[in-house]
Image (cartoon, rainbow, N blue to C red; front, side, top):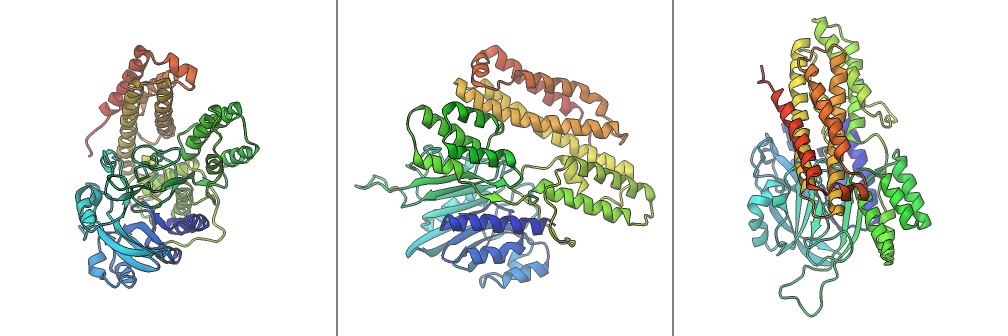
Length: 516
């Protein structure tokens, strides 16, 4: 199911990129299943595409992939984290050399640099996957790459942003879960840019960034500066998202500053669309109409519903419930507990659009560019029917607690950033980021409480009362508009906010128990 959804989603994005006449496209690490390789090859005609695939886990898949790249063998691909660079249908696989602590893949060959002809111009393009970029970028530099593509799946991004970019353009494509994707090219013209290049995309939102690239700026600067301009910084929007679709339609009427403020308030979470609306309002308020910005704010890829991870998980859970219901269990209690748990999971997930045809069981690769699914969902998608009910609950409880602690830790960090905000505008931006994490944490706690009240056997749900009170205090302490932000600039208010987040994190941490 996940493979089918991933391929469908990719095709829609590739269609959009084709209409935009993109020459070099980069997708995040671990994003696409190997089944998408043919679509990527077809798209690469006359252009270059770089995409993270998956860890190759069996000989059959390794042998299939090796046929597409004459430099590869099944032995070199097996058990590796594989990405691909495809230039005009010629496939080159990249196996990641330096793995993160959480990765199980074996060490691969590392970065590569190839020559590609784009619109009659020969360009050297390098690829370094995630940690390889941090530890082996010099290999790409020594190979004289003009463009460096960095597929990534990382929550830690500061090291990926150089203090002063030099030598080559950097195309960082990180998973939407962690955000931060950007094109790093100094001297870039346009709005929503900074000294490094395009401003990074926010967490939790899928987006597309396109730059019109002339050439890399030389030092010292030449007589004529390169003409590098931001062309698009768009959000991937589902057809079922009527809020955003209606909002984009209203932009056709050239809204006033006051109307733009109302539209911004309809997009409460950080997103590429919200960023554009804020920038557009600022341009109109300053009597500086910008036709390019007006085009950008209305130009977004619209994709079908049901391909995002939560909707896929909903269909997977329904499939598992159907399979469990038809089983004749050897141990009835384990199957019954698993069935009940999956049914509760179905109720917490959006259904999205059901596929037109029935979907057979397939090897699956989750869509990694979606916001992270709750801990209970990840655990329930394991093969659980053979566990006794008590074992299932204990494993699920540990995962839930770790997920709660992770979110509380993120909230504490973000509220500390609120305290350090230098201006009311920056305070509002940081507060919105904290509010987003606060909403995720509140929803997760509410789910845990509902599970607890259903008699699922959790041992620490009675201790969540303090956590819920802290969440309520935080909701009341975060500013939601500019006037409230100015009032909240007082140090005492921001300190109380941080103290509440810290107390929440400490309360959850005390609940942690060693694994049985």
